[in-house]
Image 1 (cartoon, rainbow, N blue to C red):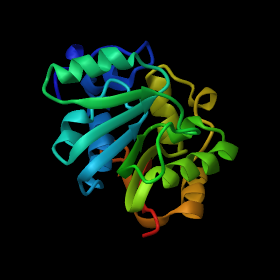
Image 2 (cartoon, rainbow, N blue to C red):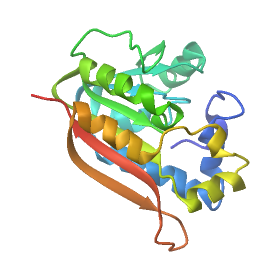
Image 3 (tube, rainbow, N blue to C red):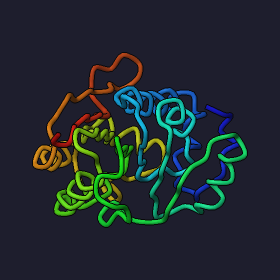
Image 4 (cartoon, rainbow, N blue to C red):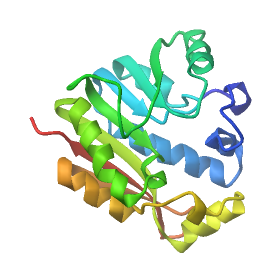
Length: 209
């Protein structure tokens, strides 16, 4: 990861600024690392909600082609930033609910801290789209905050009332994923300082072969 101040900004809500915080930085980094660890590598990967592209260096080590879909960023700015660092990307503006890609386009789809912002009724559509663009046997990896008091407290310390931004719980997300894909495993990230309370869940699923 580059120093945080090198990344192009994507607005005041860009979580990249939290990566440098003493207590929350390691937690933010670890949640991303756990998602990336689940990806086996291959020819092509799509990250939905890529933000500043903090995952791109890691993805470039595993995949030949990196595509990205996001509604709230300057795709030209982000693409230029990474191209200047030797990583070519194919970035588009669009929604997880209506992905502008042909069927069976990707070996993997990555969604980090995106799905909790959808209404529960929208999750089925999101996973249907992800399933559609995955190649047979392709991998889907997501990460979502867990609906726990520790999570709510942590976000409150960062200045967020997550009840105003998070509409689906990790249970909602898992249930919707299981309707379309086969679960490989679920992993839990605990709160910092040795607190044995899960605050983040990573789901790894595969499409039908």
